[in-house]
Structures are given as structure tokens and as C-alpha cells.
Image (cartoon, rainbow over all chains, first blue to last red):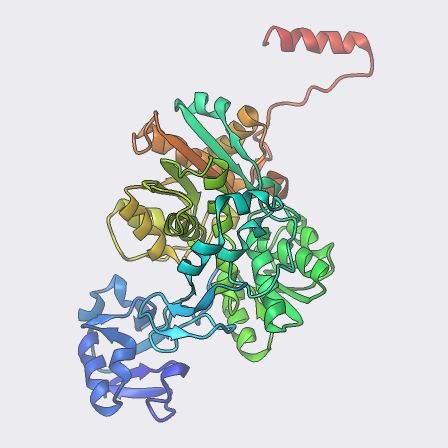
Length: 93
Length: 413
């Protein structure tokens, strides 16, 4: 069993149209870097210099990683990671 | 005319053409309008502005339109009131109220942003305008869209108060009441905006729309006699207004209309929805989303889009953030009304009460020049004051009855 990673629509071009890909258990930042080996170009869209970009939200089992251990949050097999652009989700006036 | 050079991502600086787009394709950051300040500096002088009509378009070179203004031709240039009575009550020397309770035509600062958004929507060739809103924005899009001849779709949470619905409905937009809270309405609108070719003022037109808020900052400086204040207190929902007031101040320095700029910027929120002031007080650069629970519904955005940028400006300018309880909000509304004769909506109560705290705790100096931004009219949120007013004197229609009650009033009994 691996980690389920949900890919947002704007990044699915990099995952050959797949909405969900498998990741390797470990820290969030390591999962992102591991995805890069199979889906080149994806890491720099999500992170910069080892930090998740400000307008990208990452959830582990629906909890925002900013309120866990951020990029160092550990993800286990069977967990679900969601990558969600902050603005495309709508914003208030 | 037309001094816009394009759009640029605030995060990664990638550049984009002038289109109805709002998010960076690469890093998902927000897009912002870029101007040619060198050319504006040649074209825009104090005396040119001063000769123009008293509306927000007197600064049109600094707004993101290509042609002449088309919408909101009487919006903006609201009074900057020297608030001596309120200053005395708060114990400061010099205090001004920027009074956006009287913006034409719908009595809130949203008329500024909608004037710019709808002018831009015309330039882009849209025939339909839309928004997601809980009140002020819906009113302004409904009204100004009617005058400008747009088809209008206004999305509101179904639980909205009847008085707020009527204040939109009178202009006969297509009003869609969504079963869900404000965040859910917003999410739905993002999906609709992807499918229909409409100008959603606070979604795909947002980079242009948000620029309209700068006019509040431009006016403060002009009305102070071409001078920036020592302090400015701005209420925060998404945080956008605060960032744009500061941007306005910086732009006037950039094009040489003011010499120096040392303004401290202060954020005001309701304690029941204070993600921005919380981050400022705790020295955090992460805006932690909250579930709003406050009387100040027009400020109740739990996940503020510009929260990071707003707190960054507050920190960099040496300002601070303060938040206040529902009770303090009502006190703030009443204080402003009985000292300055200005009836603000709940957001105005937040601003007044936060300013009072900032003065009390020494963050705002008592000998400094301070401007507080009052952004909407109290007639829109009257229900908030139910049970908090002074008493009505009920009498029979004869002199004796009046004399009796007058005696009581006169002797303070």
C-alpha cells in the first residue's frame, strides 16, 4: 500500500491526465521530490527551495500541513495527500 | 491614455498580458496590475488632478483602464472629516474619518472597486457581470451593473438577512441564493466562472477590481493637503483594502506627488474573525484560517486571500493589528455616531473600537495624525444595534405629557 496523492486539474498535464498518483511514505517534501522523478516539472510548481509555495495548500488526510509539521509532516502508507491551489478554490471580497 | 504594462504574479513575478485572468499558471499566486510609472509621472501632476471632477476617476492614470471611465462616474471623493469630537473622546490631537458611508451609489467602498471592475468588463467586451457576496458588493454590482446595462448574476448565501436581499433585489439582478455558507458560495462561483464567459468582479476581474480600492488612499493624501498621515487604520476582511491603501501611498511617492512617506499601517478585525491580527500579534507569517463568528458580517472572511500581504505591510511599516468583541463593535458604532454624526456599519464599529485600543495601548501616538477608514453605511446593518439604543420617549399628544418627560430629560433622571 502506498500514499494516495491527489493532483489538481492544472497539474494533471504533468501526470498524464491522472487525478491520483501513488507516492512513497515519508515527509511531505520527500513525497514531492519523489513525484518529480516520475513526473518531471511537478516539484517546482508545488514548492521552491524545499518550501511549499504560499498559494499551494497541502492536506494530509484533510488536515492542512501548516498546522501539522509543514513540509516535514510524516505521511504513512494508506494516507491521502491532497494538493490544492489556494486561489482557484475561490476567494472573498 | 492607458498606462498599464501587463499583469504580474505577486509571488514568482511571471508576466501575463492584460486579460480577465487572476491566478499565475505556474505557481498559483495572485496576479497584479503593473503600470509604467515613468510615463504616469510625466502626465499626472497635482494641479491636473485638482482641476478634475470630484470622483474617483480623477486618478484615472493610476487605474487599470485603457479608455475613458464608463461606470461609477459619481463614485468616490468622499469627505475626509476632521473628527475633533472623536479625537477628544479618544484622547488624541489630530484624527480624521475617511467617510465611505456616503459613496455613490450604494453607500460603501465597494462602489469604488465595482466602478473600476465594470469599466474593465466593458473594455473586455463582457455583457454579463457577476459576484459572490454577503452584502455590500452585491448591492454595488446590482446597482452599477443596472446603470451600465449589464446582465447581472449575484450569488448570496441563502441565509442572508431579508434587508440585505432587498437592497440588491430592488435593482432587479438575477439573484441566486445558494444553500450554503459564504465559502461554499465562493467555491461554486469559481466553478461557474470557469464555465461561463462572465465578468466575475471578485474572481476573474479581481486584479483590476482590487485596484479601485487605491482611490481611497489617493483621496486621503490629496485631502490632507498632499501629505501622508502618521497612521492609518484599515478594517480587514480579505486584507485587500489594506494592501491597496498602502499601494496608493507608495505610488504617490513613486510619481512624486508626495515627498516623504512614513505612515504606519494598522489592521482592524473583529475578534470573532481575526486571522490577520492574530498573525500580527503572534509574529507569524502563516495566516491560520478560522470559522467566523462575529456581528461584523461584512468582515467575516475566515480564510483571507490577501491576509499574508496585509500582515506583511503592517509589520514592515511599524504598525500593529487589533481586534475587538461584538460589544466593543457596537460601542464603536455608537461612539462615532454621537461624536461625529456618522452612522457606520458594523465594520466601522470594528475600526473605531480597534483605533481606541491602539491609542490606549500606545501603538498609536496621541500627538500624531491618524486617519481611520470607515467603509460602509450603518443603515445597511441596523439589526445589529437592536436592543443597544438609547430609549425612546413615548408620550400622549399633549403639552403636559411633553413637559413631564422634558423635566425628566432635563434633570437627567
